[in-house]
Length: 161
Image 1 (spheres, rainbow, N blue to C red):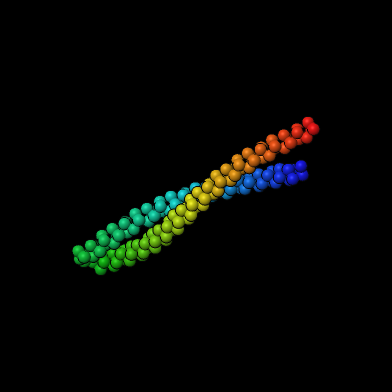
Image 2 (cartoon, rainbow, N blue to C red):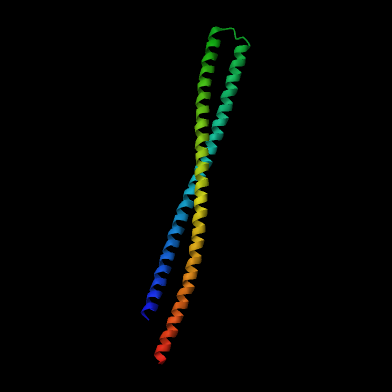
């Protein structure tokens, strides 16, 4: 009888532990899904910034091309030439800045993609573990019901004696 009660207590403790682990895994999955959603938003934001940087880069390149073509056409006045040179210099500086920004944004986007993939793998792993724990909880529940039924039958048999 004591062994039976010990076995029943062990099954209950094991069932409680499995339920606790399953709940913990579900919470972790929710947190990771929220992180994944946040990372997706950051990726979208970075993609928009990348597009704006590329457009800015294209405009700067057009301005430089225009300025260089104006210089090539032989602007005659010194002030116009100097002004265009300053403009070209400024545009080249803007172009360098836009290229650095584009490079930084591209690197951040790449890192975000890697992190998003890692989070997706972690979510899949946690969902798999959750499924395994749910199966284990179901198995333990069945065992618990069987042991409970066996105990009731044993008690009933003892009472009939």
